[in-house]
Image (cartoon, rainbow, N blue to C red):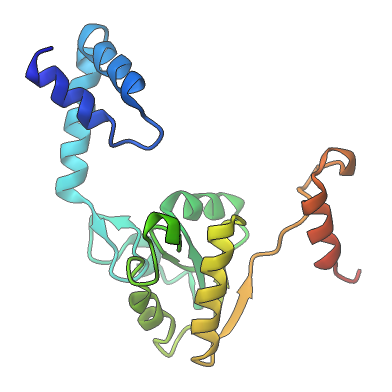
Length: 196
């Protein structure tokens, strides 16, 4: 196998969920069937790496020192929503239910993967949350074991500094039917029920 092809296949393996066979199929597809797509992909990656960086306030990706969302006067600076990844921020925005600011952890605490508080640079979150403006931090990490552990750790860290901390609610999905909902979700919805 030519060295450039081996390097391409090995490089594609860095993507999550891409093993050796998938990487090989992708490489052959790009080289044989979509060379223009390969050039666009290479150019887009090169451009993104050259131009994007982390926002100094929310830690998401931006071209500027401070992203447009953080610079917006229309946002409530007293509310700070903590999410794991930029994709989670995008989903929160699509819901149109939150008008505060964000902080993106770029991961979650996962001891099995060697990711602890230091790797997530939680000191940056702490500095952001204790800026004297933020009044409430909403923890919107995923409802996985790692997300729950992250929310617990971050919540304790922020409460110790006197901040109001809340957690994104969970329960039966909108439009969901109980007979098709898992028992864990139903149990959590019952625990987190509210008065009408």
